[in-house]
Length: 242
Image (cartoon, rainbow, N blue to C red; front, side, top):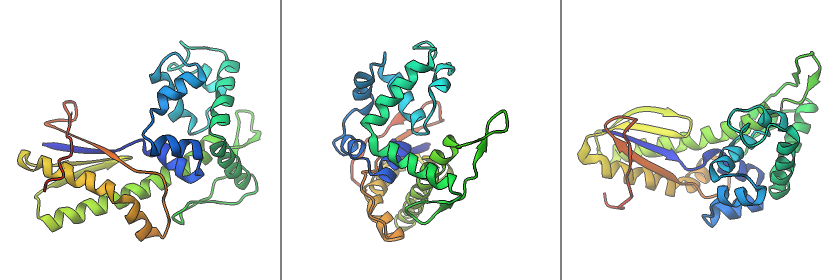
């Protein structure tokens, strides 16, 4: 059977960590429903729209982009509407906004953005359709989040593989895509494999500290599903029994 481990809100939690935004960190630590809170705060029509909006706004989308995006056009085609939502978002998560601006200032000065684990991103200024120099917002907000998230998943993957070897469970690592690790295991091992994944994420902050000497603050978690194919996957709860 296929067993899939998906890191919970990896991009959002990584950005919250990079910025150390107190509002985002509190919502995550308390297990609050950020999307429902934002739906109400930003007066959006549904939790789903609020969820999609958050994961797009991680990379600082413009009001024009939202107004012309099929996922949001049914809400409003007016860029000013979405610019106003953006103002509310960056007022609520003010430290995230400050972090984005600090990264942009580094790019404008021709300096690299340096991640908490020592990864360095050299990001050149972009150009618009007319050849004018512009700040590459999508790139400069994307690289630190995606790059740091990839390092987090690297540690999770190595930790999982080591635990498998220690226990001698015959599992095949199929792939890792972004925030997901997929393995192939006999049905009788599914519960054990799921518990291993949950334990990996329980220990992930400690292993980040051990590996990179960095004190990660934001909680990390995962969701594990299993099934005969990727279309028919069901949640596997943890039992903590190996």
